[in-house]
Structure formats: structure tokens, C-alpha cells
Length: 167
Image (cartoon, rainbow, N blue to C red; front, side, top):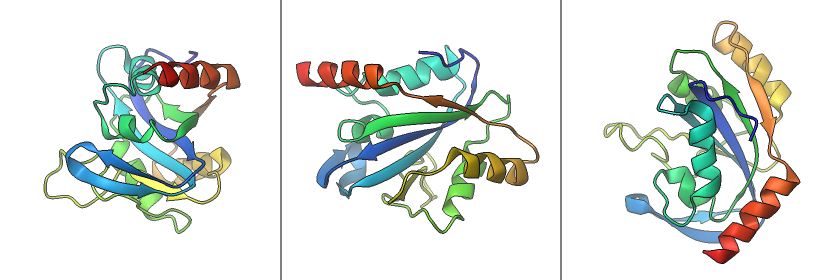
């Protein structure tokens, strides 16, 4: 995987092709409708972005984070990220939350550690979100922060699908 080991903030875009119900830890059971899901997260631990995204892509048998549950039913498409040392996760979630083309499908998804918050770090769109939109919005919203894009290859998706069948 060609993601950097640097720490940073990311958006993982995934596609769900069919309607399903999904149990997500203590959050409960939710409907997952066909479309695109954008999950905003941060990777400031050991191994940075490569380790965190690698975990999400490989660990569906023993989910740890909320996104790990969703990735049991949705295929990862691409990752948008920055290696800026400041944690931008909440700013990015606010950006998605203020954009009319997105809606919050599951309250508190990815943000349940903020007990008083009803916010979410998961956003749904019927159509695939455009990286170009994100680049422009990020530039304006976060004072010139630049993002990079990592497209998840068909080969990687095939190996992930095979691994999921073995679980």
C-alpha cells in the first residue's frame, strides 16, 4: 500500500452496493443503503496513515473501530488524506456535515468517545464524492491545507474480498 507512515487525517470512501442491516458494536443495528460512505478519521498513532488504513482494510473479522464494521458490507474505494501535524478530523467532519449533498446515516459513528456529542464522522451520498470538490473545500475551509488521494486498486479489492470469504 502506497500510503505514508506519517501521521495525519483521512477520509475513507467506501461503496455499499446493496441494502443490508449492520450491527455496529454498542451503537446498535442500522440500515446500510446502497451508495457511498465517507468516513473521517485520524491516524496519529504508531505507523501513521499506512498502519491505520491498513488495519481498516484488513481487519473485518475482529472490528475495533466503527468503520471496521461498515467495511464488512462496503468496499473501500479511495482515501483522501493530509500529513499536516494538526488533528483536523473534527474540522473535516464539520465540512462534510455542512455540505448539502451529504447526510449523516448513523449518529455518533466514529465519534462516540465524545459522549455529549450527537455528531458523526460518517457521511452518506448517493453518488461518489469528487476529490476535486474536497480539495477546493479543504483549501477554503482549513486555510490552505492540501490533501492527497490514494485510489484503492482492483487487485487489492480482490485480495480483500478473498480474505473476507476465508473469515
